[in-house]
Structure formats: structure tokens, C-alpha cells
Image (cartoon, rainbow, N blue to C red):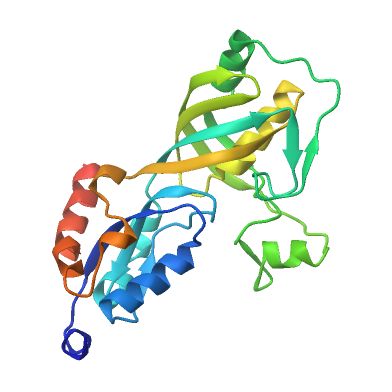
Length: 243
């Protein structure tokens, strides 16, 4: 890999992140595979989440990574109704809600429409967002009381897919900075039954789709460059999207 290190390679890899890895784990895996240290990503995925992770490889790509971080995103998610979690997802401490009446499908459909639009959203206490230089989940694990500042977000669309209590699946198109875990927690609050994120999959970032991505297990030191999209190609697609 010494020859690769001496080249000014720059481009992007569209990765389909598996369940159980952090976004930083993916970056570490790519560093081992490519032999390149300068790698970053355009938008964190939680460890339990899967799907599209846009990774910049090389100085030129990572230098302009901020241009791609602000793109809207689409997700498919499954909420578990009738319980809440301190992390807002299945990996947290779960408390079952008592005396819950299963919401009707029509009630859910009407309630979901009410989430569409611009709004303020509180990030979950267990998140990678930094407060005074510390990640919020690190402070939360220490029992610190965290004053959370809301993000201004937009939910462009949200549509229920299937509902079989306690499982509710839906798809959504949201602006950058939107926490789907918080959205699910808020859905449970409005329904009066509680809810937490059971599964989450990111399907698009801007005009990039997970169907274009590659899994980590398919990448090797010999073939990874075949999957590398050039900086110019990525920039062109971002520019076309905003025309």
C-alpha cells in the first residue's frame, strides 16, 4: 500500500453501513483497506442504524466535505410503540408504558401528517452532538444534566408503510440535523403510548442512493479504487441537484 499513500488520490466511497458499527468504525476500516489516513464522512449514523454513509477519501475530498454535509436525507424506520428508551432506540434502557390502548391506523396517519414542515427539534441526550467540547452521550452516561439546544429542522415528507401494533414502519425525507430517534420518541409522545426506534436505515443523501453503495466486506486493498467516485463527479451531481 506504500504506492497508494504517495498518490494524491481524492474521491468518495458510498458505503452501506452495517448494523453494529459506529460511523467511526467504518472510517477505521476504510483506512485499513485503502492505506489512506485522511478519510471523513458526511453525516453520522448511529451504531444500530444501517444504510448510506458518504465517505470522503483524500485531502481534496475531505477539505470540501462540508459542502455535502448539508444535503437532505431519506430514511426508512421501524418504531416500537408502547415503550420508551432513554437513548430513544433499542439499545437504551427500555421502560414499558402501562395501560396502553393500541392507536388506530387512521389516528397514526393523521398524527404523522402533523409532523410535516419546519420546526424545532431537541437532539437526544445520547447523541454525538458536542456541548462545551464534550459529546452529549459521554455526559449523559456520567449522569450529567444536559441543557439541550433545539435544532431548526424541516420534515419534507413522512409516510406510514406498515402498522401491526406495536410495530410501526414509515419512510421520511428530512433536512440535515434531523434525529429520527427524536422523531420516533415524539411520535410516541403524541400518540400517548411512547415509542422508540427499533430499526433505522438511511436510503438517500441528496441525490445519492444506497443502491449505489458497497458493503465493507466487498472492499479489498486491490479493488477499492474501482468503487471510488471522483470529487468532480460528486460535485457535479450536487450542483445539478440544486439547479
